[in-house]
Length: 386
Image (cartoon, rainbow, N blue to C red; front, side, top):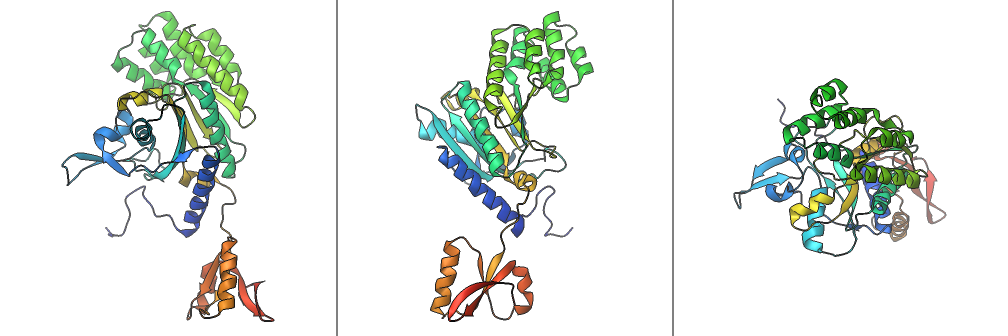
């Protein structure tokens, strides 16, 4: 095997794509900043017991682990930045009021989530801590859709679910952990025969409610159907009320769909879960939800809601993402007027590339469509390279 081959589902990012991703990163972080979200930069690896605290079994399986040669303790390479940001909010910032934080960085997964995805996503996201009302869910979901729009992705739609509905049914019926896990996996697959088999010995109300959840998918009429078909438990009524409020408030920024069997992050999230999709793109380009319970694991319970997205996927889905062509400047290091003109162009955001000696035959590789030439004693930008 050739030693320079990369591991499966790990790849280099070449200049054109890297430029698109970096422009996108700056655009989205600037969007977060003007909404009051402060940037944090957690480390790439931490002790496993800290990194995985309160995140559930799924994230444990996705995390690469290694032994720290300094301490002898087990380290983990982060598979998700969100728990790290929760730790920062709970232990380092220690604020009492609402805190808005954002982040951007690489994460590493032991396995790809599907055949077309990298094991090294470039995760970017935003979180709100310290507010438990639906208003903060509305804020982060609106911000997520604005980030999609800033990336040039039009006609995105928003899927909404609520893990409290399934959780209320399971807990009210006093279903054990093993059977709950089986129900969870069947629900994720929307496997009705498996759900019927697993719920066969439950009381009628719980059985009918659990088997109804996969059918509760679609537009606003889903909420009305859910009110009729699900038990009138306070937790379920509150969840449906929150979903209705989200739909009423966010209808101006996205097409809304509901999926009451969606349990993504069930062991991590505690309330509403959401995902953004784009036309012609099968995978969700952004995901998020409420995770009020994660703070307990850090010794300081804090209500929290937020979302994340993979910059690689976002850049791929983004139309017209090519970079601007540059300007070719001749190699004249002692020409003060030329150097001043180059500096002025670069200050305006133009790409100016110096034509180093001996490479005239390879100028096409530089990606320039204009050049600097001296006209009437003044350095001017003209079209073409000749």
